[in-house]
Amino acid sequence: MMKLLFILLLGVFTHGWCVDNGNPTETCQTTDNQGNQKDDSSRDPGDVKIYEHTLKNGLRIVVVPVESNGRIYFGVLYGVGSVDDPMGKVGLSHFLEHMMFKGTKSVSKDHLHYLLSKYCVSFGANTDCDYTLYHHIVRKEFLYLSLVIEADRMVNLRIDDTEFAIEKGVILEEAGLRNIDPTSRYLNDAGARMWYLYSQYAPPVIGTTYTIENISPKALRKHYKKYYVPNNATLIFVGNIQIEEVVPIAEKYFGRLKPSKELKRRVIPEPLNTGIRYFIEKSVPEIKTQTLQISYSFDKNIVVALKDMNIARFMTFMLFGPYGLTKVMKDEKNLICSARIDLGFNRGNKAFLYITLSLRDGVDRRVVEKECLEIVRNFKKFLTNDLLQKEKEKDSTGFKFMTDSPQELFGEMVGLMKGECSLDDANNRPKIIDDITLDDLINMAAKIFRDENMNHMVYSHPTTIRCFEY
Ligand SMILES: [Zn+2]
Image (cartoon, rainbow, N blue to C red; front, side, top):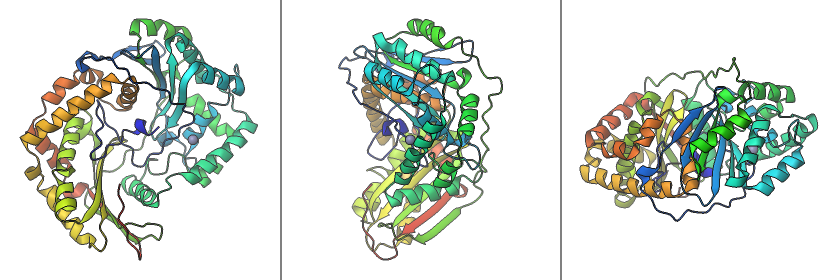
């Protein structure tokens, strides 16, 4: 479900507490029978509060009580993803997500599917670099059943050799289909290799044919035992429910599960850039567009607090949006067909800002590069108080829309749980946004746009060049 990726595109606002983007990330939707419905009630976004409780076994619970027409948006988020996959076995976490639908020691695969299909409005799962999510939309009267299912498969999963062999075929096929657009595939894969030298953020979440073939039922069982434990999971509830109602039922079904004493996630820190990295200039026959990507990779600590994330977001929109780079390079100088700007905050110890430009036919990429860097280096010219006020107003409208929709709110909660910003900050979001000043934006730009943080990457087609609209 792409919404859970929180893609931050120019012109497509992602409002919320934490914004995360996963350029080198792939999600896998196992099942999703969409049936969400927008709540038509109206409320002050400031009324929406997040409540938290942790059970004795370490299981974290977060609840956002909002009107939801009797539907509860429920999810279990595990702190495990492809970055935790053993070397040579990338794709293991994603494979395990598939196996979670194959039945347990107490419930057969068919019965599990019967229960999920009959009692849930929708259900599904996805895996990314750092997390695996199982999500349900369920009517409140059947919520207990969703909890029973998730508590059971947290500890009782059955990994059957025959089912394993069948699923391997499904996953190999899925891996072959990923990222059909070659421009995105080349940029993602090359970008990830450039940014991540040691940790497993570089390979695709789903793995490659080689690494998927390397996965065995034994490896899956070991991974499951290590990471599917209550002290590595968060239950998320959004809808007509209060934390006082949730805690007793969560305690009833999950309270008896034993925490793991050995749980330790180990993510290898990546070295920060120490100078401009100029990547490849390469002709790739499949690529139809001349593409230039300039990215900045920097210490993630700059954007951990909710305020800093939103400062970076505002600054990015103002500098590259319809009043900044897009206006100059697309509308005025006709150098590019489109610009795509992404921010990535939660990938190991690094964060990213990348600018992907699709060049017009016959335009020299060196001219585009020079122009782009000129804009970046003169960022102060594009950051004004008027624009900041406009961005704040847009943000407030978007935030209101998001808090009116339990589905959107659930997506934002997942993003929030994946990040590291505090729930206190999230509960004070309107004030935090209001306090952002122009100086904050200028200081943020100065921290990010340093030459030593810069990476360049260029791709072009050897003969034909066609404009590509992002
Ligand atoms: Zn999958």
